[in-house]
Image (cartoon, rainbow, N blue to C red):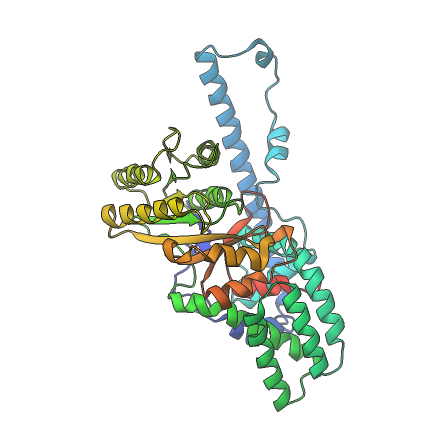
Length: 449
């Protein structure tokens, strides 16, 4: 059975890693592909072919899901009946029909309805990245639609003002000065804003730049800035290595959504065909362990935990590594306690966890991912970076982009923290977290409609 690997962003059996367009930089895509897409004579045919194939795929997937859910329902009823755990009120409840199950699952499944504006925009972004009609997937279209919708607040605040400033006339120094205000208002940070606008001013000194070229140039520079830490890391996407142990620690201050992010990553791993295990190492926050267990149950993933009050987080990780090794697990996700730079004891606990990992799993691929709430903007970034040294950060996960107009904080992460953005969350649903691609992010942020 073909599986869509959402870490690699492709069907794992459909085409090779060396796909000719996959290694293009975001700026080269903007230069060569996106503006040419609208001029392709076969663009409409591309869309029709992709839509027809996806609709068929969607119908087949829906039939498989409904059949499995009906089977699961019958098995659950038989199990309860054999254990004599039916309550009298439950016995009177009617069985769910196919329609009931179909309606309950619509919000969780990837869906397309028509060749509408959302489909056309998403299609254009995928086509610009070199994807062919037969390679496009429901998951990719679904995610791009969610991303664009999630960035609506940032886009309204930034793009509306941007387009008003650009107008139809060539760019002027005054327009560039106004762009500075817009970038800072979007919480892009001083360093990122200066870097982008300095490049634009140099371009203006060399030649006349019209509005369309100015927008294209701006997109290119935004992508370059976001891509720099990613390219320095040597990995375009963060992907678990099959056949070996990968350990990902989720760190950050309280309230940024670490546990929720961990749950979504776990679900993403299962959907992509990876085996996973969760270590509930946040033993300081009330109900944290129970919250992790709920996420584990949603994805059918075992959770290693210690429900004893103030249990040792390092001991939990110790047990989890042993379990992961014995089961041959691909990905061990570790939930850690929220901490501030003033909580010295928690900082020491985090360092202790790292020492346990280094000792028990010296060959494991370890990632330490900072979870950052985008609504906190620059303040959240500065606060979280206070413990970056102890955490040994290797990447960032930006959450809650759908609830803020500060989407520009992604630029600050790249320019100030100099860390690669690995995943972004643009919604509350379990599927609203995906691997980060600068080209898609910038296109969604600066979409005109």
